Length: 474
Image (cartoon, rainbow, N blue to C red; front, side, top):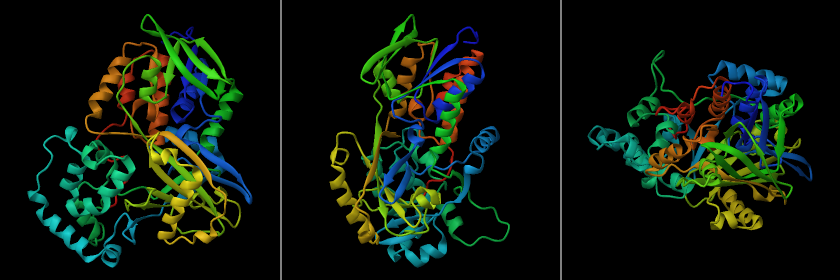
């Protein structure tokens, strides 16, 4: 790998990991070909742009924002985006049972908002928590067990159970506790109590989520379209609309990459292959078994004939009967996400390819989510008649019970292929933030450049069971 005469590298997928790998490899003098199935780059971090009657509306695949503790990455993004990088503040709420709770929870809001039985149940749980049975083995514990042992049954039932089942499409007792380990910020109900009680001046605060973040003027995807333009200008070959169909092997190496573009089947030989494609898809292209699955999302964006809907960046919709899991107003991130004087409302609807929600005609889905919006107090008479949609088939790696063993089996099946490096969120089957995916891309490129096998390190990069950034209700 370290021999610079080995020049040709295929990077499969032009999301954050693929683009960063291509960037570093190009700087090191390698000939890079970047394959992307969509018409543009960015992957799950792309921004969708639609020309509406009143102008352009933009929205992201989900709630992206740029936060990192990596100074090299921060400097890279600052230089890349320049004055187009805005600074934004995050404000979120939880909508549940006809009530609106601050996110994270705070004592005054909880006392003012929560029904008395919820407060009484939470206090009772707090008193009984020291005697509650803890999961014997974190690795095999379910999400439901983990939450109840840390937060108590009342908060689990109120804030976690219905929302989690809706998001994942399975009962929380079939979901791995891994999901909680890196996504729930406050360790247990005692910490919740400490956070809810007024603190003495100078006392240590429990870690919460990042309120301030960087965000590009024209949507999160602007980072990656800008990087893609730089790569093409520098001579990197970018093939968009190119769907990988097969990877053929010879002598424990990928011999050829096969793809379809403009209805024509093509193939080419490469020395190294970096794949950011979903782990099960890469296995499928190699004829290897892989029993891992993803949860999909449909994003429904509707123009609204008013300037602002609320001051919230997003609203978590915890009621199980409401179809969407989150409501976002894209112009809360940047005023350039909607035409002047207008806003839009974007709903994230979880589903599984082939199910009723995935297959529902857009008009039917619009009707359903419009009813939900009305129940949330949105004046639906101000909704325009336009509806914009995007889909993500591989939005969330489904971390059901026992997935770790099945993931390990897939990784072990790929390890004998010496010139294949998996990278990125989908490629490593990890629920990670953008900066981690970008770091993985750089690690994959460095592995090609210096010839040291770091594939296990890439698969487990930032995989500690500690909070990355808060996603909890508290």
